[in-house]
Length: 465
Ligand code: SF4
Image 1 (tube, rainbow, N blue to C red):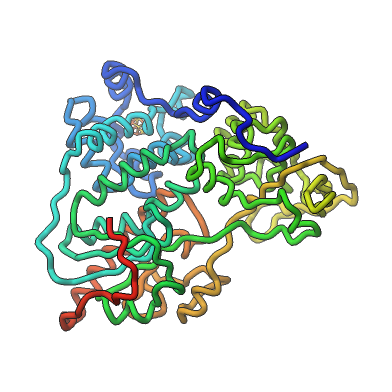
Image 2: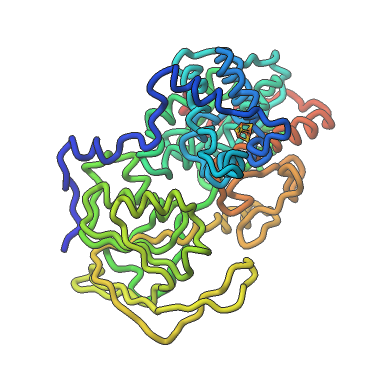
């Protein structure tokens, strides 16, 4: 057993990572699907979208050949509506709420329809939004992920000059770095980012990390408001013996390298165990298989009824040949020559519900062992507790405390997205950014104009796009 890269031919990598949600092939196919929509008055699809996209309206606009209008309807609610059409778990959101489900018929393919006008808008660079003249007010945003970009776009439309500080070399956050490549490509993420920035008034300074390259106090002095959208960090520790062995890796790191280094460069084991059953766990497991791992086993301490991923995600893992070990909790990792070789698990059973409302797993006293050469940890991400603590923000175990619409315990400092909720969907982050932008605008308008300030601290390296 060994962890190696370059396992497959270039053709096999291309085949394994091609778009899992291909667009409609013809305009006629789009129109047929759009005309299936019943344009429901109370639109449960819209109510179930965290950003409240007016689904019947954008579908009607497609059906009447108003593609610009349709793209605008989507983007005004969700500026990352194109990306979300690829990565949203629509089966538990809009498509899961479609009335066709009640008639036991296939729901409207809302995500594929949403992709049609948004793709056209981005490819043809339609200028669907205009920016008001600059008000001279400035806002700093920390993090160029979905929450930060969504907030920046709303603010810029209102004439606010926005500077985004991003620690990575590219924008897009988890969309760019943390999602399976067969759902959304890095190239699409770059295109989406460029479309958002084409509005003007938004500058991104890459390679700037809060707490290292810049300090919150410094930003408070230089800007009218600050929006924190720095997400969450790496995977939670398993806190079991052997966790430091070679071959035990973090799921987000693994996915990050797939998205940045290229498929052939990423090493993967023959026998891989993935701990967890959320979307990130599924993305890691399926991609390990698609990189050429012979066996991939997902290990989860509860049952299918309690898993955080959707049925559709589980189906992808099953079709990729991944195996599931339900009611199993990792107990220890053992190895030889410093490399992981075995994962011992405790067999679990379900007891009464815990604080989450789900039945709590408890050990049965039995164990079993899996032969492994790679273990991927995917049991949720850790908040940046030290960073939040050092900044003097009130928090709960590292998750920033924020009132409705993002105001934190510090005046003029707002926060939203994963750094507040601990990690939800991209669409939730987009909505948090949007709502926070509204609150930031209200806050700025209630404050006297700041005296003109000089250039931003020249010690901050300028990697402006
Ligand atoms: Fe159309 Fe389904 Fe939404 Fe009704 S619930 S408006 S049929 S997409």
